Image 1 (cartoon, helix red, strand yellow):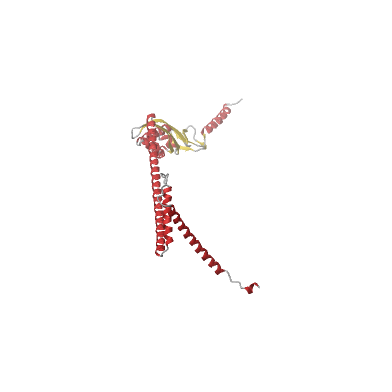
Image 2: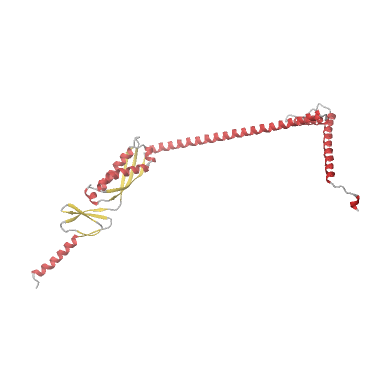
Amino acid sequence: MFSGFDIIIPVLVVLVLLVIFTGIKTVPQGYNYTVERFGRYTRTLAPGLNIIIPFVDRIGARMNMMEQVLDVPTQEVITRDNAIVAVDGVAFFQVLNAPQAAYQVSGLQNAILNLTMTNIRSVMGSMDLDELLSNRDAINERLLRIVDEAAHPWGIKMTRVEIKDINPPANLVESMARQMMAERDKRAQILTAEGLKAAQVLEAEGRREAAFRDAEARERAAEAEARATQVVSEAIAKGDVQAINYFVAQKYTEALTKIGSASNSKVVLMPMEASSLIGTLGGIGEIAKEVFRAEGTAGAQRQAARTPLVRPEDNQ
């Protein structure tokens, strides 16, 4: 038979074990637990195995210490130029101080959400629509600085605040599209005008260069003509009648060539005697013969000067 004492001892052992197990708390990685003693915060439990006093201490708040994502719902914002746009975003935050996040604010995520939405309206409402569409990075940076500063007493760190979409009204989008097309047409017309201007400038420079070269060619032709006239004049001064015939025949032939090459000339009337022309051409031929004869005599004299004399004694 078991006595009453034999029954009480196992019961006490079981109660002690239950109390011990009640005081052992395991905190998972990435979390911190706050400990409250009679309703007052005393300490924070780190990840791992922890022991508290049963029936005196209890777990208060289980805080997630990992970085968390909070979606910011779509809201309408009135810009500085009275344009209404629909804006949504996303916020990233991390709890750095578990007691502050647990006891400084009630409803941490709701507080962060409302704080972010109000600051989105404040920041974007102070800007024009063009600034909203072109300076999104600046908006994100400004929002992050303002929200992080406001949430600092809650023991959290705002890591990022991003604007996802900015949706203007449909009629405003159409107006912006027409404005963009008009601006692009304007740029295209400017580029076309600049290209036409450059082409005209190059063409004018080409004409100027061609005129310069034509003038230079005429100048050189005139110098050659003057030189030829001077040579003929010197020959006439020396009494060379054939030079006169050569000069007159050259001018005569050039005049006939111009008359014959005219586009409106079908029949050429020559008001001169054929014998005069033949005589003139004969004078030109005589001049050429004398020139060739003089060159041949000079060449023979040079050849004789270079050829050595052979005596009869050397052949024997």
